[in-house]
Amino acid sequence: GENVEQHPSTLSVQEGDSAVIKCTYSDSASNYFPWYKQELGKGPQLIIDIRSNVGEKKDQRIAVTLNKTAKHFSLHITETQPEDSAVYFCAVNSNSGYALNFGKGTSLLVTP
Amino acid sequence: EPEVTQTPSHQVTQMGQEVILRCVPISNHLYFYWYRQILGQKVEFLVSFYNNEISEKSEIFDDQFSVERPDGSNFTLKIRSTKLEDSAMYFCASREQGVTGELFFGEGSRLTVL
Image 1 (tube, each protein chain N blue to C red):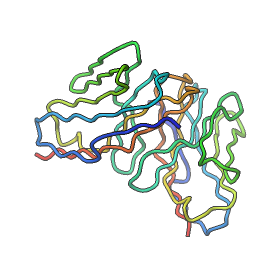
Image 2 (cartoon, rainbow over the protein chains, first blue to last red):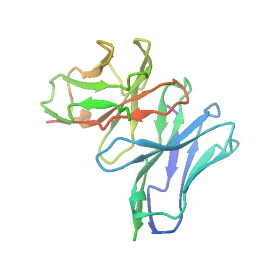
Image 3 (cartoon, rainbow over the protein chains, first blue to last red):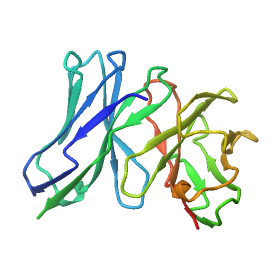
Image 4 (cartoon, rainbow over the protein chains, first blue to last red):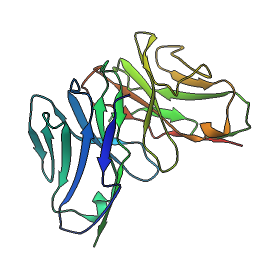
């Protein structure tokens, strides 16, 4: 499937700092780029997504930026809080569009 | 708020046994999915299902796996002869649109193969 690389695998920040997670993908035809948050023992939950006709999207403390030329997109969390601690996955839609292929995840820890 | 529900939450089985994992997708959704997540690893796509047929499947989804929508509400994943490496969390998901709609995940079914 679509090759999705995600970095870093772990990220530790102080409460109030910003966190940035980056993903790259290989298929230039991909046009949908969601970010999911997974809390312990739960299924992934969508937090923000972006489509290829947009370069940036913001929702309160969360933003996603997309560079289609370079084939990478990033998640930005500002003013982090302890409840932001979770595993974050980027994803990209497949060639057919039906499937979402996920990155390996970033374990974010926000310390008070 | 509508949600995807999965049963059982945890199943323990012996190697070689058949397992059926059940899901009730959100009622107005048309696209259904199974993903799996081996402990501590990424979420891996298994199969997508639309209009009563498989629309896409991954290399993981071999002949040991099958999916079915036996009635208007349930969506099942069957593993015919389980292997140790099938131990994982299996997530069902559904979406209203096929390509760029939000994918809603269930809480998962943990499968342990002994």
